[in-house]
Image (cartoon, rainbow, N blue to C red; front, side):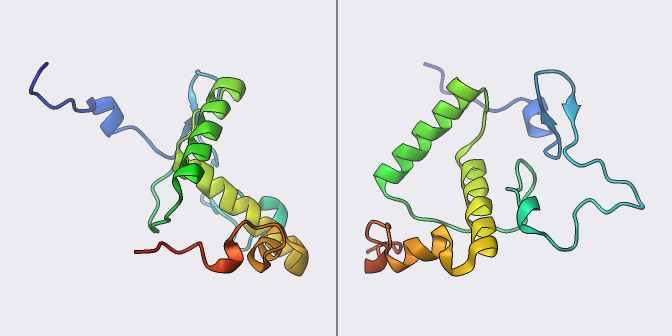
Amino acid sequence: MSRRASLPGASELFRRTDEHVTDGSEPVSPRAATPEQPERPLTRTVTTRRGSGRQKHDAKITVYVSGDELLAMEHARLKLRGSHGLVVDRGRIVREAVAVVLADFEEHGDDSVLVRRLRGDGADGAEHGEDTPSR
């Protein structure tokens, strides 16, 4: 066993994060912006809400999950990779899930999945404050 630390290569350290590869060919920019056309719309509608994907993010939050939730997320990540050919990390899954829930909330308001689950209509333990870590 070597005592040297294994470090990523230069290609991984300096790769572009604003591009993605669709089928193993050339990287494709998700949004080709021109000076006349802004990269992102100023307002978003329900139909255009998407997870931010693989890019440099300027904000960070910490989310506590149970062991079962983490295991379920890893299972979903592996299934996305094995069954659908989508190689994504847990952060991408979380961003997409947040985008889906917020779009549903904007479209349905009081009848949204988010409101129903937070009220306890189908949320296991959410009404008991289990979304915060106990210390």
